[in-house]
Length: 361
Image (tube, rainbow, N blue to C red; front, side, top):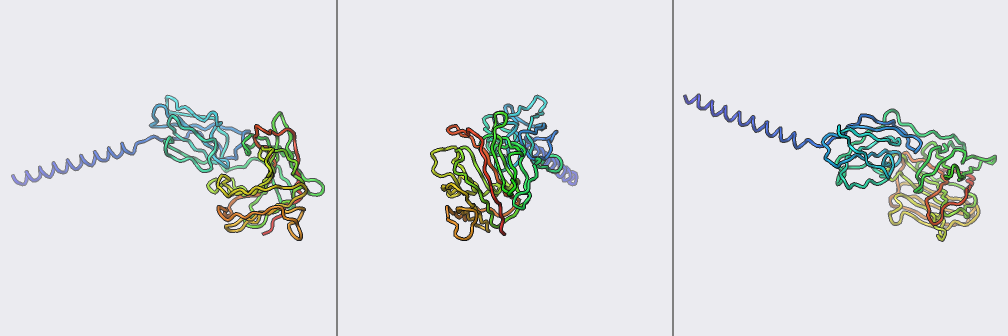
């Protein structure tokens, strides 16, 4: 009799324990249940540009009323898709979504609450928090491909001439491979021309990374450039927005302000950090700009004439010792382009001549 009572008590305790375990497991699954994003159509992995678009699509589970999808594509920065003025993608009654997107190497789908204001670009991948309920990122399909470029030989190096549009400078400019060429003396010509009522610019990119060392360009007179024109020599790492693209610049421009006494600057990214830009006045005539990049330090110098040695007359110099990037996949780029300017928009085409590029380890 006592044995049956003991067994009955043990049985009730075992059943109670199993019930508690089952209840805890159920509650845990309910707590873990949240929204999810799936991709059903992923575009190719390719360098972006306004010329090429594709479709991205998927499904959302567990979304609340009013929530929508926002897509970003990474090509350099993360760009909101398909356009900054049309960023929101509705979730259909069957929980699916789809949108046109420009190409990128990676894509991010964000589930966002009402009231979210997506920035046009981000340097790093979007992350969950605030009005961003969920983020799902995925690599583009296939082997990553860069946009086609036109090959160019300049100063003994192989370069690629840009062929696709760019938003650098706050306005969308065309880039025409015919806007960059070398003459019989080997000098590089870069021009800005009007094409179909839009400005067409020039950019050449070195085909490999050189790392630490001294970079030198000899440039003919740029003192008469219009305020909205920019000539830039800079390093840029397409793959590392988290390192501010390892960008370091020598730039000739008045940045749209005709009254600006300074028409040139040295800089490292991010430019909004105090001390990361040093402005100066570049005089008329041929100038030599150099950038000496070392571990934890980058030194810029501009002198008159076509040489950095001897008795060259110093125009300006500056050294940065904070925020200087280490080498990665950066490459030197030479670019002549137009910035957006309401006060002083570009009025006519222009041309610059770079006599020589030199690299000294």
